[in-house]
Image (cartoon, rainbow, N blue to C red; front, side):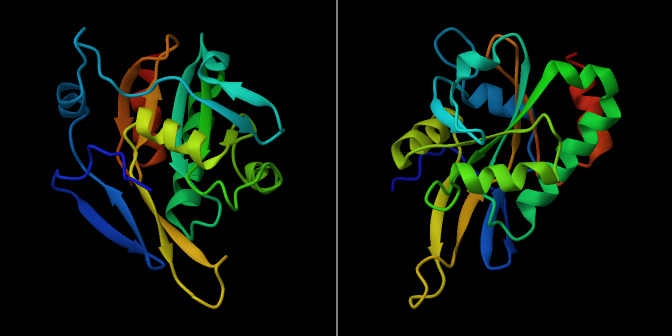
Length: 203
């Protein structure tokens, strides 16, 4: 599968998380906006998608209009980076109190083969109750990752156990406005307090 990402080619940091390389870049969001502006001067991050949530309902980007979207791409079998980030998001939402009701935290899998609706439904309760987890077909996930400029790739681990593998993926958390347009992102490793402060600037 083609890695659809402008992340490739800029200098970054690669960390090994249980054998899986997680790509993240400690860079200024303004730089991201500048590098990805479209003809109208808007950051070309985000766009249409059709996926299925952890309750089995078909969901598109239009279902989130009028609310901020806090979007993270990962997978449920991720050994530590994904659950850590989702826990940070949950804590940041708690810090924000009632203001957090304006935000829809969204987790989009990059591993649709294993991350079925049932798998996501069992995973979501470990985090914020407002979390919406999304899966879909390989093509639907590829479209969503392309829209958000997310890199991901499968890493084979055990040839005798094809279900045992990790996923490489970029690890920023994106904030989209109520109109669906990109506002900013949080680098991997941001703590809950700094994320809450960053979110509060837009609420």
